Image (cartoon, rainbow, N blue to C red; front, side, top):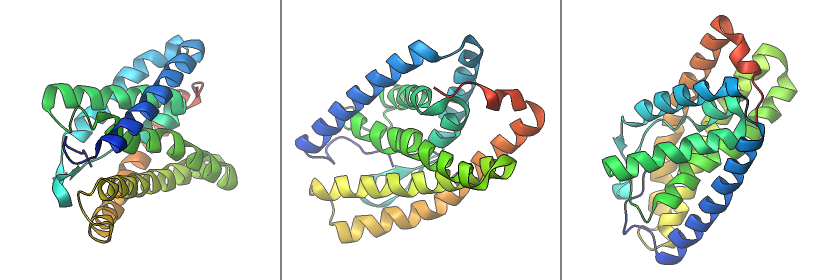
Length: 211
């Protein structure tokens, strides 16, 4: 799902850069005010896990690629704003050091693969969790949010590519969403597996304040 430079028009990547700067800036402010010291090591562990998981790329149509995202996983543990910082940091390191996605398109990649998962995905998770309730609610909410976040992120990427004139919407949208509907199942499975394991071994980590 990483978009290289040259695939987005100037207005599209410019607007998405502004969105990224504004949201990440707000996330830093919220995290600085409310994150507990106990959660800091978990930020590092989640960042490393997500970074490693994202290094396995699968080529998709129009020159983009797909991989595990992990934004919902981070948000379940630490909330949407701290998770946003984690995801923005991961994508920045991948872009600068590994040329995974373009520098000009970095804002779009952070919005698509980061903010959609950490913010929208988090509130989908909370909605499902509150309806189902209990341990099953936590797992069901994580699974639904992880799958939907991947699909929505892929659709957003397709729309941006089409709006930039890179590929017709009727070609890129089915290609992206079709592949990511399957990848989303894997994302949901990994997310539930990790959360289920932590629930059995270190349930206290799921009780950290979600900022």
